[in-house]
Length: 265
Image (tube, rainbow, N blue to C red; front, side, top):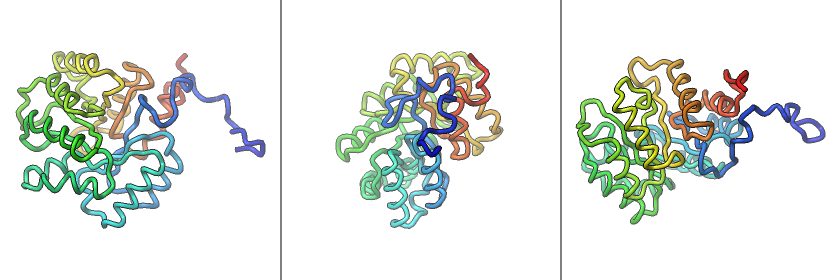
């Protein structure tokens, strides 16, 4: 800020800046994937970019690898900054596979989480199972749910994506997570199904998850291409998840028309 309290670049805000809403947002949500940020890294991120993201996924089973005190401090800091942390859905699937499901949701509440992800990425679970878990999370434990759907390698994909999505939302999910890569799938039927899901659920309720380097043959330029295509297809207020902390500001810049699209009218 200058001595008068006015930002030196005030007015150079980006062609789409007026479309961006402030927190708490109902659309244009961004979710960051937290793969083990330390407390100082977390504070650096929220100080620099806290106004630009709304959710933080504590990836896979990392909730167990922090001490109880550190996990609590990390969750509380995110919440204090208007950011909702939640444990990655694969941890729930681990609990199911290893017979610890009854301990999982109470543990989430005890830890201080207010949101959970319900997915079917690695475990051979049914849509009915997802529906029951979502309903329990909402009704019994007072949690909000991000329900995730998508094609799974090595698992039964016989349930249409649209039916899976509707089941998640009907059971009480607040947000539906979709794999962004499937919108631009070479399979025309899959791409068409994604459009049907968006129409049925509503674009404000859908969050598209970006792929990451943990997926074979996914490179940084692939991620940037996908997020550009999402914004061009659905607008600046599309919900985007699995953003790397390092890419958060460049994503917000693109949303506002200050990125590589800065020359666009």
